[in-house]
Image (cartoon, rainbow, N blue to C red; front, side):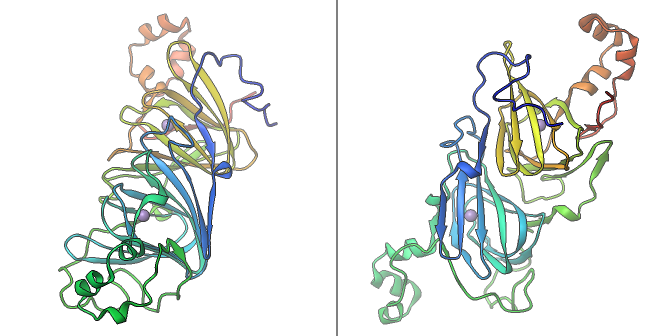
Amino acid sequence: MTPADAAAAPPATDEGTVPNLRFSFADAHNRVELGGWAREVTERELPVATALAGVNMCLEAGAVRELHWHKQAEWAFMLRGRAQITAVDAEGRRFVEEVGEEDLWYFPAGIPHSIQGLAEGCEFLLVFDDGGFSENATFLLSDWLAHTPREVVAKNFGVPPAALEELPEEERYIFPARLPGRGRGRGGEAAAPAGAGDGDPPCFSHRLGEQEPLRAPGGAVRIADSTNFPVATTIAAALVEVEPGALREMHWHPNADEWQYYVSGQGRMGVFAASERARTFDFHAGDVGYVPFAMGHYIENTGTDPLRFLEVFRADRFADVSLNRWLALTPPQLVADHLNVGAGVVDALDPEAAPVRLFGAREP
Ligand code: MN
Ligand code: MN
């Protein structure tokens, strides 16, 4: 049975003033363009989210998120469909890759890139390592050229100004374009032109869905951080799956705020903010959640389908502290004297090391 809405009927243990920790992409302004759309949840929508910002974007077949760059690093998770991504690094090495469902990509700050929907189109989540980021304030190829004197652009490329008469007069951002040719893949559609940097650039993509998950009673988790996705030095993430009734255990993170995206299913998060403050939030697919640094929290699947969500951190490594493990590794008598519990509870504590643990449905 689905419990009563946590906002309307909070658990009796909620207390005090805890800032809002939820914002749905469904409540964000949708920027609709020919070929696709984009909406963002940043610290303007969710003021507590100062470390990270997110964008939900959809591109139709062939449509392009224009060649651009930005001051922030970009981490991405493909929700559905396929795209071709491109980048060129500062050594002139080029990267062209196809990405599909559950694949990630990461472009370091300042590295120019593009995203193009393939035949089936695509929808993805972008996360940036700055809550103040705006998808509407990136450095766009078309925007720069439209704001540079035509003679300068002609001189820059060594072509007559007449050859540039059709340059866009304003930014394109998202626009329909031709589907890429055959033979795509890392290294590009054809041999790199003479003059390209030697060798392959860092691999900007990662097949998260193909990664063997860490399984536990009640769920599974896949973690991608700089240990297995080396280019991702500023963003670490976990894709967590929680079975109905199961719990992503009580824990906190010793290194960063947590930015969440709920991919599917429904869940409830309780957050402990110290000083007798606690607040509970319900989440559905398409919601963004946030947990400020060090606050204790748990997430329970309150639905009948698996709950899948992303935990994203502005950090080079995923790290969490399990309440259960901490107490299991503390002298038992000390724990028992804190909690007024007997040996049955102390003996149930689990000292196992596990990056993420999920507990099965509790017995009634
Ligand atoms: Mn970008
Ligand atoms: Mn967490």
